[in-house]
Image (tube, rainbow, N blue to C red):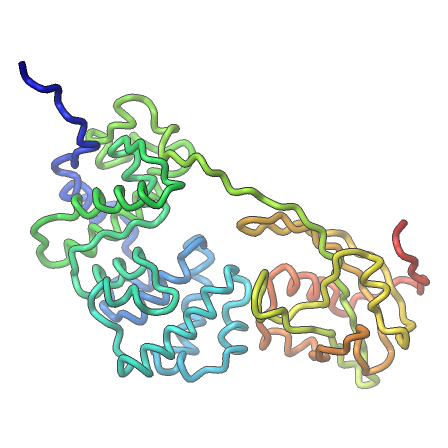
Length: 376
């Protein structure tokens, strides 16, 4: 009597790589400014910017950043504040800090040359396995698969992969399957087209909701589509727990006799939300803000409309309070900050919602003085 067959998990469908490469060359994204180059610096910069950020947004920041820092040495030698200022608005600011640190390591420890293999690249600050694979594949044709969030979704559906991607073990298993799908014999720019094809498929066709299966070049191979279960993949049981917080912001403004407007900014702590960026003082309540407002300041004060801002794990309700000051001293009792001319705000790394609040109030008149009382 023969033994029952052993379930070895998903098998790799034949023809996937060839179909994907052909589709990418005809219908994929081929006109982006960081494509058609084998310069690891350019590819690395684009890959870091594209993490958690839409292509349309990166298209605005990428040329400006590359113009100021055209190579890894110029980035390594830059002041951190200038790097953060150019990054301001892209969000996920740890990327910018790691970018700067990585450039310094490449110059100091690798003579200004990025390592060639994905394994070696992944040892650099801020370069994870998927970014390392992208650099190695695009620049050196290495047969290694990227496995970012979009690719996990594509492959989970293609293979009807039932592993829970909340778990590291399932992510590792899917990574091995992704590597098995890489074309065995690559010629010319096949690895470039394959790698870009994975990105394009996840971003434009195999989307999170309502995937366009009728446009998919590998729909005939997709097991989730065959069973009508694309909405069940990828499997991820652990959901992000989002916290809701209210932050009270002190927008302190002073207009000098010359007409120049100054804003009071403080550097955020080295760890946490907006780490190391310049920001208005932040308080956990209106009462705390008013208590910390320097006694010497008797200006005009009013509440502004609150602003909602979403982060990966938090929903912030930003409640700004605008205060018009008359003396060039500290805006808060601690005094640990600086007055920044309105025209120089662009030179400081400021979180996008804070920058928007400051510019919205630029040159706006302030309502008649109100003696603030703590909220009851």
